[in-house]
Length: 167
Image (cartoon, rainbow, N blue to C red; front, side):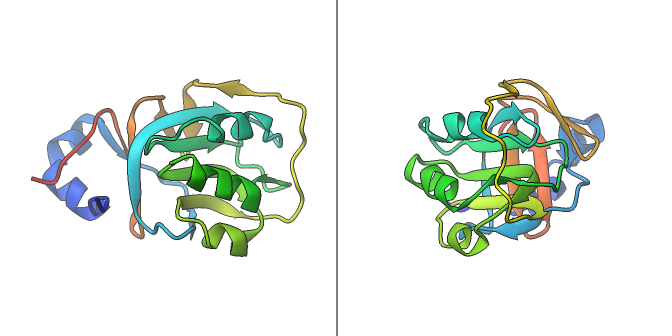
């Protein structure tokens, strides 16, 4: 099933926008992957220039969820590459949002998964396993909790405290 349009979600849920239950990520993300629009429950990870925990999470069953990676906005290395894009696809993740960089863009663009990132960097990350899984993260001035819902399309990214409809 196609993800509902973020503009339609905002229009149909104006009261949730007003209350703060539905937030727009203000950060500017670039669009990658074959899924231009995606949505699902959020899984969080907070890392800095190290993607071991990212791999651990993506190697688990995605079940249509969205991995939100808070890489502290670092552009000094990539937290996701083509291999992990393939893993995300094969494990059933709907999407990955990276507050940081990715690499292997051509490979990621061939994956049936939605990816948003700040940009690209060909340098791979550290492999020390540092960071925290399943914790609240701050991205673009927005506090994001595990279990909330993310909706992404060409217009932007929304985070909701609960699953929304456009009816």
